[in-house]
Amino acid sequence: MKSSKNIFHAVKHIINSNIGDNVRVAAICDATDGIEIVTAWKRGNNNPKYTTRSYVTALLKTGFITRLKRGIYHVNAPIPDWCDLGVIRYAMGYERYEKVAGKWEKMKYHSKTAQQWRTEIGEYISSYMAKNEQSEQPKAEAIKVTIIDITPAAPVVSNEHTDGQNI
Image 1: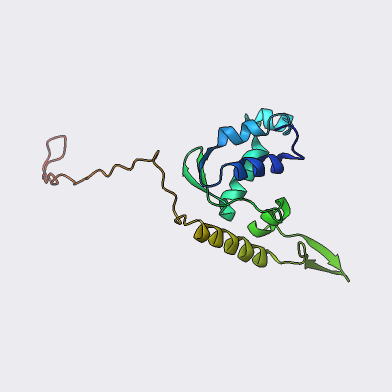
Image 2: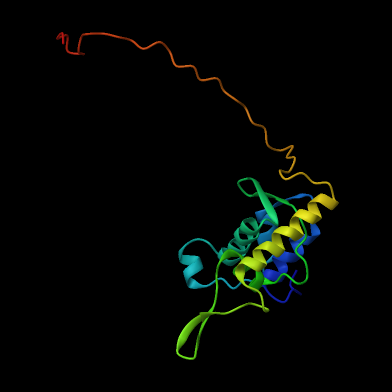
């Protein structure tokens, strides 16, 4: 994966290679080996793949992947070519402001607002899933839910304190 342009492209490649399947965060982190630079801050916080994990979180928040359980995600739809890191960030609410004629104004990203990007991404994922007959929630064979019946025992009513005195 060393031929990728940057970390986001490496993450995008792994996601697009596993459409409709489950993918482990460890596999995504392995794909960014040699691309993500481990800084002193990342080493000090024992999180050398901080940037990779933050991109996975961004894809989770925008709906391209769904968390099944810790470290395992289901890929709902491929990330299209028009969707770059700037689009993902704008859709998540990271907007840019510039001073225009003495006033701070929200800037658009590729002539679209954050809400327009959120709508476009949502429509893209919905249409992709409808076209490929995927349900909203992935079918995860690896997840087993056990429902435990917790019925409280009858309460013990006593007028005595533990030291033997009556109330």
